[in-house]
Image 1: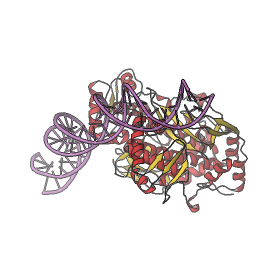
Image 2: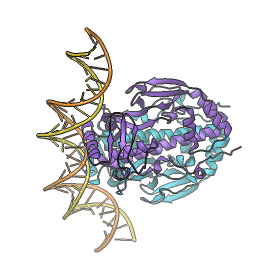
Image 3: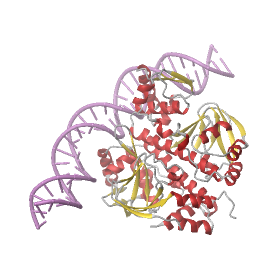
Image 4: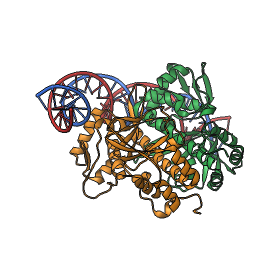
Length: 249
Length: 249
DNA sequence: CGTGACGTTGAAGAAGGTCAACCAATGTGG
DNA sequence: CCACATTGGTTGACCTTCTTCAACGTCACG
């Protein structure tokens, strides 16, 4: 996974001309391998680069004052984990690799040059940030208004859909390394309870989370249990709905 | 409250030159009076204007499939309630007035013209969206990792601080109309439990929520109970920390 | 082949939800 | 100006969900 996949992602929601697309592909970066559970962006740190997840997964970690951790976002391969740092370089949350992860660090300077030269790129990046914001908003609903089983089912559906593995008639399994502790931090539950609820989902034949993969056994039932509706992810946007405010030259 | 207050808000975090400031102040708008509990932006609707809250308060409403409602953001006078609609005109959540509210509707066309002419304005607006996103992120921590008392205390501290009423040594009261049902929707609790917890806060002399005002009796204790730290609001940003990526001409 | 990280299970208790009733304030039509 | 309806606030009794604590199992890796 490289910059091309991020460009594809931008193009799935925004319209960019050839020059603009080339400007994205020409962005310089520095490859960084990060081990699991490592904070590669710390709270309060001022960063001069944005982090594109090339492989693995990244969690955005907040915590309350008793040290109880809360994951407020998960970024998968192809996602820009802290695009907002371009306009807000001081990190308000920490970024931690959930498993061994490859990061492409893209200097802010390069992004700023590109957006200054091509305002439509600024627009596309701003839009990308807003999609993340919409996901965050659903996250609030998830922890605020769903019980444990629905929370976990919803989270699994979201991850599967974002990995392109959602809504299959038959069961699927895809590689994804996540611990029960991380699921607990993402759903606002305790590890013990996550364990019990996962057992329930497994027993009922909805889904199984194993050490290195997630298996969705019955998408229909899982989506129903998690009250999942994928529109908020804005993943399958019809070409005519893709946007550009600025003229195409 | 008018456009000037929104400009002030932008200037508290971004650097804008005179022309850019004038462009903001010159934005056209249409005034709209909205009664409490009225959805003035509905889910799925495509809007062609952004809503600046001139007076009153607005909630961003999501809901799960059982109809349980969750407020994912509260916008106060001086806030732009759906700035993200400029780059994403299809509403992913509903906006509802929490009490009788005055909205200034600013046409997207005007905002787009302004940002196309002055890219630094696009930057400032993008940044403003990201501040809201940071608040949203804390909202996840609030509902995910704090008990009922802390959630309510935190919410009251946030509202007070955003109204410029935070961190006073003596007690203060400020006008703010919110029902216990709305507080329940914002904190992911039930009305009954909100009632009991508010009673506790009142009895312990921390704060009192009345029909038309909120009284903060003891800021110190309330902030402690809510684990409140206002940095995430980015309200008091030193002038030298205010940002501009683009050159100042 | 030990050691640490992760997963699993049981028992007990606390936080919060549910149901149901009642009260207080405001607003409206006759 | 009053009868009545409506909305919002308050309280008690009971029950469910989730947490806490504590122990033990299991897998991977040096």
